[in-house]
Amino acid sequence: MTDTSSHRKQTVRDLAAALRREADGQPPLTVMHVCGTHEHEIGRWALRQLLPANVRLVAGPGCPVCITPAAAIVTAIALARHASRPIVCAYGDIARTPTAAGSLLDARGEGADIRVIYDLHEPAALARREPERRVVFFSIGFETTAAPVAAMLREDLPENFSIYPCHRYVPTAVEALAKLDDGQIGGYLLPGHACVITGQVAYDFLAQKYRQPAAVAGFEPEEILAGLLSIARQRQRGEPAVANCYRRVVRPEGNKRAQEILFEVFELADGAWRGIGVLPDTALLLREPYRRFDATAVFGVPEATGVEDVMPGCQCHLIMLGRKRPEECGLFAKACTPERPKGPCMVGGEGACRAHFLYPEVDNE
Amino acid sequence: MCLARPFKLLSLAPDGLSGVVDAGGATLTVGLILTPEAKVGDFVLVHAGAAIEVLADAEAQTILDAFDDFARLNDLVAPADDPHDRH
Image (cartoon, helix red, strand yellow):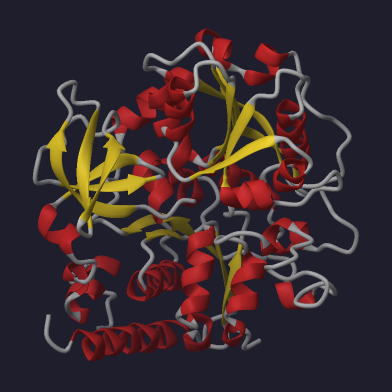
């Protein structure tokens, strides 16, 4: 492991040079990634500055916090305000995410019992520790989170535990994006850890049906650049495929056990994405035997409707589709900052606006 | 929320449904339902308190091992025997 740092720098330079050669003389290429962690690593390592002028890398709707509909947050707040005063557990980023009716943490300031968790097993453990209280888990995230949540729901759970799930599935969302695309996107950089569950095969439709290059990528700068290089080569050769540039972690077929459990507990249905609208077959809803855990039924709290996703002036919905850059939003870094976020993309560790706020050097356009 | 990290599995619960991993000196209990093949000593990829994959240990130990030279990485991007390959 001697001289690792300079060795890595050279690898990154070599990859960037290979990408420049591949793109040289080619038409402009816009690649969309669909992973908030990719966006943050791209910003952290200033990778956009290494790209040739004719290669653009845009952020798609890959931040699970950002795409959670405002109505779901408002429903979770309503659950927390139920007369029986349940404890509502949520990950920190979604607890801070603003809606027109405030955030879960605002509700906590008004007396609701909101607990921030880091581990999906914590809500059930809390329910066991406090049998006199009712505990609700407001569970969000893509299949990376939904699969272990499904596994947890198959185990013995205490009577005072229930869940309000708002999970979304990435492959069908990417298909919806590919279908909506008007020729702007020339390839997809696929999310490494979501692909651990589904495998690369879940994205075969990109190459087969849409003739779009794609690559599964990890989160190191070398891995992200390797994915881009693969996409550029696929396009240059006219041979779209789904390359796996994260082979040491992602199996082509994914984690079959995780897939079985995920779809034993959940089924796909049309799902709303914040500010984007309904994308077909992208929501993971509880199947019948598991609906007994559904907090909205347990508490008789209906799902909120008519909640505005887009805050006044906010451009998050366009930023999540790669149609605007965070810097093009009038609120960015002025009225909307990580300390006082106005839109969901400024809140958490995966939001594009937060990444651009933290790493302004990414802006070389 | 989708960033997972590798940890070394130190012990398994009697029912095998959870285990304890080494988190840089401290320990964490993680769910193992999705990785029933995980054995003590394996590296597991952990997300939000649950293992989602078992990793080949040598590769899990450092994220750099698989990328220790450009030739190998280039090979990952496109097979070296591809006649179109310019490198």
